[in-house]
Amino acid sequence: MTMKINGVDNTRPVTGATPVTVSRIKTADNDAAQTQSGKREVAVSDSARTMADLESRVMRSSGVDLAKVEAVRLALERGDYQVDAGKIADQLMRLDWELGKASGRVK
Image (tube, rainbow, N blue to C red; front, side, top):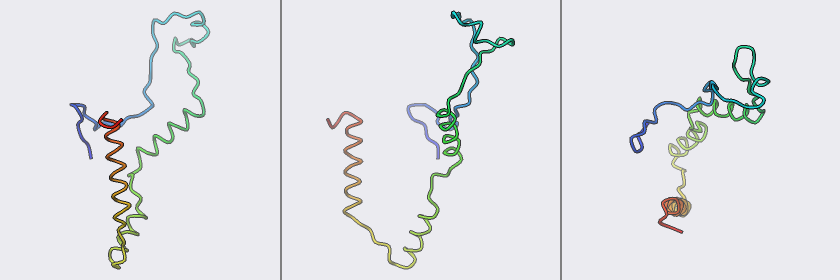
């Protein structure tokens, strides 16, 4: 599912692997930071690698817990699926409060 928000097209995936070329930056250690090809070397931390891996996994994921969907489907078929109306109401109230807080409607 894709959507546009305020004219922004959200159909393209976001990736963290965009190459960057540094040019015309003068620093005291500029010569030491550049290789012979004129490109700068960048060290990537383990945390950054982990985040990139997680981002990649999320992009490949459907975001749906298929085991839970199957369990609910089976419970519906058996007729023993129980709806907790109080829990649903509590979550709706919480969502409304959070949206109101984010919009400035609730302080």
